[in-house]
Amino acid sequence: MSRAVLQPFEEYQKARVTFVQTVAELATRPQNIDALQSAGVMALLKPLLLDNVPSIQQSAALALGRLANYSDDLAEQVVAHDILPQLVQSLAEQNRFYKKAAAFVLRAVAKHSAELAQAIVSSGALESLVTCLEEFDPGVKESAAWALGYIARHNSQLANSVVEAGAVGLLVLCVQEPELSLRRIAASALSDIARHSAELAQKVVDAMAVQHLSQYINHPDSQLKRQVCSCLAQIAKHTTELAESVVEAEIFPRILNCLKDVDMHVRKNAATCIREIAKHNPALAKLIVNAGGAAAIVDYISEVKGNHRLPGIMTLGYIGAFDESLAMGVIVSKGIPPLKDALKNEGEDHIKAASAWSLGQVGRHSADHARALAELDIPNCLLAAYIDEQSSEDLKAKSKRALKSIVQMCTYLPALEPLLQLAPPNILKYVINQFAKTLPHDLAARKTFVQSGGLQKVQEIDAPPGTKLREYKEAINHLYHPDIVTYYSPNYAETLMKKIEEFGQS
Image 1 (cartoon, rainbow, N blue to C red):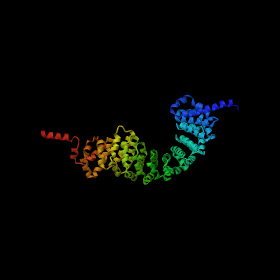
Image 2: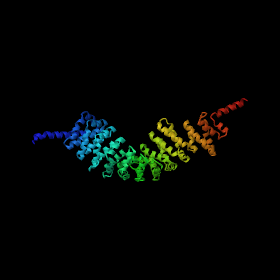
Image 3: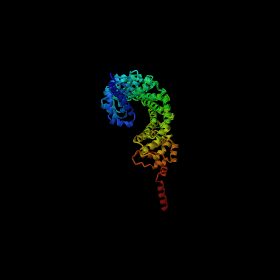
Image 4: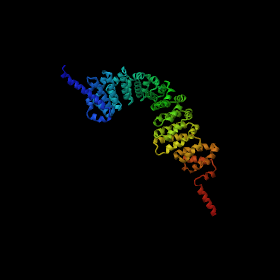
């Protein structure tokens, strides 16, 4: 063939190569995206996916992936230009480099919304992606696993489609591969499947995922540990049976080491996993405490701040909620001071609310539990959160409920006395009731109550006739001589002066 004939073809090929490589490079910078979109880049890249030169196909797919990754609007354009069927067809036929690029495009489209992920499922991509999990090349497996995870994460219907396509067993095999990045992404994809429902989590368990994942709990790689702890948490959260299947993989006490990991995300995910196990029943909560989990969680929430604290705070609440001995275990493990610190000093109200809830769960069991909290001034802290105008409604509700449950159990009266001055009437009635119940049985407490000014504060309370507050106030007053009650009444001085004036006039 003459040179004159070949030359324009070679130049055309060079121009196509230059074009797709340049577009792929330009697509890495956000400031170029709008200009590329305005130039009609999608329509120009689409035919290049079927180019007879493999490198052009790959670069075209890479450019499309980068564009789709940038925004849901561009991802929708990929769908609108009917590019997905071409990608799916090529996934089954092309070389490993193209398969990685094509899977990247599918992932970039799927990540934005359930609707876009559903478009990928409707295009028949799942079968091809699952087949890629069986490829020899770990990079192809990794790209496919990543795309499957992004599809599954949106909702249970999409996750079920991934399961029905046969992905779970192959993802578990990927978890066992030597490549770290493949293990991480496969564990993440399994987590995305298990998160939606007990049925989907059970499919992951049935594929022996828990046994293989649990081996990596103390792996040196932090990113792998993050995904492993996350996946185990997503499995354990649904039912007692699933939580038990995670525990049976002997994750305790090994997972407690993750609470001291240098990576904050590992620590948080481990705490979340422990929380999801602790919440189900007393037996699992007791297993955690016996493994040293309560003390480890206390250390964790003492060391970290902000949202990372939340799963640890809730874990102590779940443990403390079940029975007296478990709640006392939280107290003995010195769990109350860091919960108090979170209630007082955290900036986010939802963390304060979780602390208030946990304190209420621990303190509500008996007088001993309530006293342990009262001695650390917890009732006052809860009251401050409740009456603070800046507090969210959830924080106010949880603080009120916790305060009420602790006060109703508290017989340590010195801790309740400050509440007489500060508590609003809807809390005050519970405080007064505790004094009315406790003072009749303790002569020394009745004497101290007068000396500390408590009786005077009771007289200053405005209790309308016929209310519970009035009933409790009168019950306290009956414990003292009328002259003493009169002496501490707010208008006593005025009454006395009138009597002196009357005496002088006579």
